[in-house]
Length: 346
Image 1 (cartoon, helix red, strand yellow):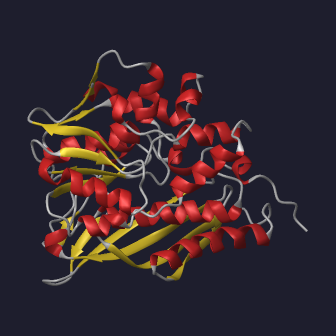
Image 2: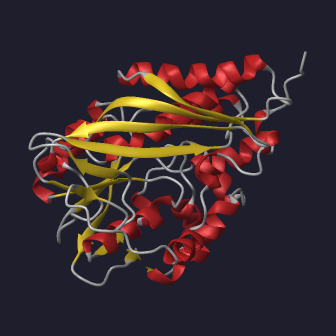
């Protein structure tokens, strides 16, 4: 019988911290030929949005996305739950409701016991069951590192699609989940995360962003994106570029997971935060920003929250909706201004 190693010991990175740095991804995609025009493609790669959207008919559009990564925790069931929650988030971020999922499974079959792999798949299936969708198939390979995720498909009304490019001047920015997943993950890998910290990590990364489907029906919501591997600054910059406006963030207003500030002040951070800042720091205007807070704003968020641009008169209602759906830490973190496509931090 194969003895089970720590899942995180088999991966060179974990969670959304595995994502290619924004600058590296930009260089790779720069060599791609221009895509042909497809009239039914409502959302493609133009503004680095969360998912593709394809018009089916006057009443329905298909939301399609995929997301997968290496383990961020050692418990197989928790890893499966986190990965599945993260994958479904992109459908919710577009205002859609998931209808179907396919599993993406890459496992070192000569290294991991069958029971461990079964636990990962069971964790993912439990999240999909909670979201009301089947895992109807997928694909598996024998890989050097454990990899798990989903292809996620959903439906949305064509006139209710939420994108990262619809923000308007004067909009208020709301973040639904607290930051710090990367910091907690780094502490976990070092064996320095206590039970309370681990519980907080699992609670935030397995909380479905299902409120996104309701936001599509909410007046005044103009743009939405989920905050994942590029950190709050990186995904705010994508919204700024997509909308052609300036996004201003209040650094002190960004909610943090309990205990994360102390860890960050003590120097706990991820390589992903460093890579993120190196990739897009030239497009961020920030004065007198402490290094530890900058790291948290760049911190890769595995299964992070939604960043919502909403008309100021509707901000209170959206904040109340998010909190009523279990996002107790939801907070106003900034606003949208007339100006160049950049992020300002105050």
